[in-house]
Length: 132
Image 1 (cartoon, rainbow, N blue to C red):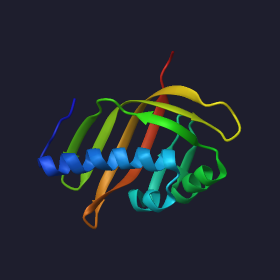
Image 2: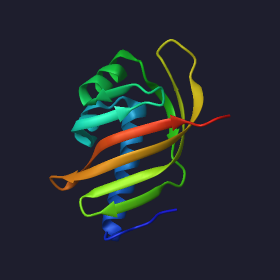
Image 3: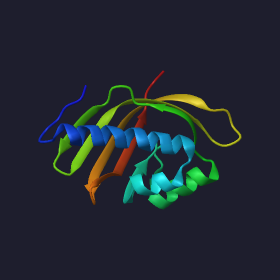
Image 4: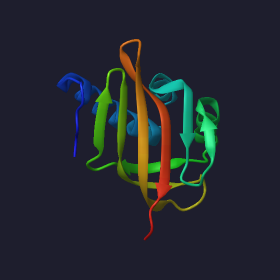
């Protein structure tokens, strides 16, 4: 379900594109794209309750703590108010640590995006593991 509040269709398409670009960059370990998408003020809260800032998250990806094979958020709910967008819903990701088997996780997630300099940056992410 997609909901719009005080936003244009262009905003909605841009936010949806930003989410897809984020997941593609996470899977590809594309640090150039991640550095553009992730806000310098990012708070990234994993489903394990570990909270990281942008530098800590990128360091974890570089070390292989987060090896993403696939990420699919299906049909998230999107709300846009001015220069802030919120996406929430269920995401399924296949992820693991380097050298260990990857596992499929179902997570309830919230992403908060802020438009800075004409582009959407991920400002906050939180995920909660869902039961089997």
